[in-house]
Length: 305
Image (cartoon, rainbow, N blue to C red; front, side, top):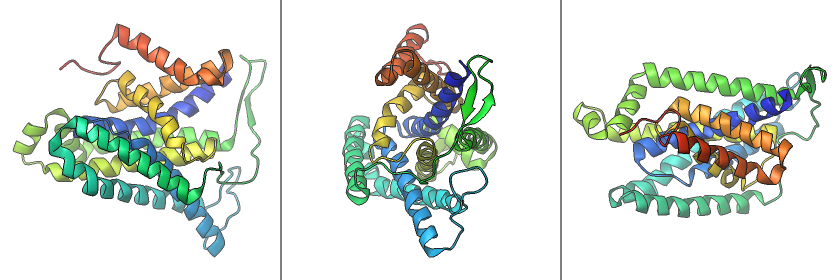
């Protein structure tokens, strides 16, 4: 029981970080961005390239830090991956979405499909289709709770770090959106774009900030997914539907809704692996989504317009 809960929280934290960026994009840009999953994959692989380059240059020690599977180079790699992924998002907006913004949400959705296919195939052409890992060593799970207590609980140091990092990122994001001027501008634009513009808020600045913030969160989620599982060019595509489920489940426009929705999706997937098999994990998440939407159509924290 405890192991299912822990595994679900770890999976859900990765889904939640990706879902927050997706929720912000859907709320402010008013369209479903199917290329958001590819931002996650590109962030994970950019971090992989950065760690490999640092190890070859001996700029940073490649040895693992304490109990973790990665060395100090990973810390710099995450920052570089976040910057690179944000750059990809801004270029994609300038070349594609900005030109089609006046055409309506349906056009933007179709364009995001094309962008997702292009990004996925470029990544596979660049890195190949073989799954890779950030580190070659095998991590041994730590016994946190003995088996006599609800089946026990085991987790690797990387998994524990992922959970702590997810909490820290969500807390930092909450403070940014609540207390910073740019964060308040983003919330105002999400609530009422016309009124926000009349109030003197620069819409283009808010849109750029949304792309950057969503891409950074996706990059961090991609690195976290790579640390706990493995890296694959299709990892963004595989996580896209769970992220959409988390956004809808939590309620469109709610950051905390996306977080709670992601955790629920993670718990549903973890329980399904144990109870009915790994092949049904996506179906279990959507089954929970259907049940909750049947009771509350706006999602857990969504508001009726």
